[in-house]
Image 1: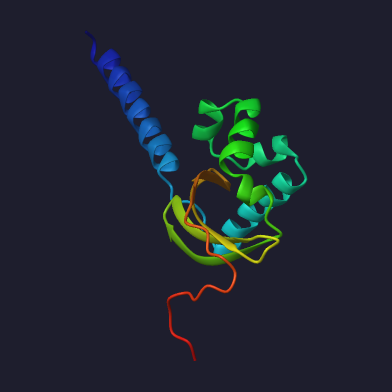
Image 2: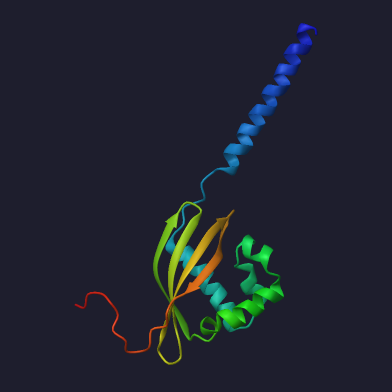
Length: 153
């Protein structure tokens, strides 16, 4: 092989490696800084969509993994059966949010018409430019008037 061909081949492979390094670096770029309010907004948007029975809009707040496992119709059925307490809540209140890179956990409290609280833990993921809901784990309902743990001042 001639020396000119060897140099051309080496430059070609160098260009491929440089492109791969650039693309790899861009893909692994950390997400933009998030504030808890950004996460609360996503959860509240889905809650408002549930209350309005606008399941297509609520489905848009779900993470890609959820949308891959459930069609829009399956998502609606799952929400109506498994998350009825959330749909029927009068309002939502937010607790602590923990953000770690592209993942976050948010504590959410749904307040029912009877004043009872339904605590929920939301797992969220950053998908590009927006946060999406990966899962919502409903915890034991707390009846109105129940004494909660903590310090009373």
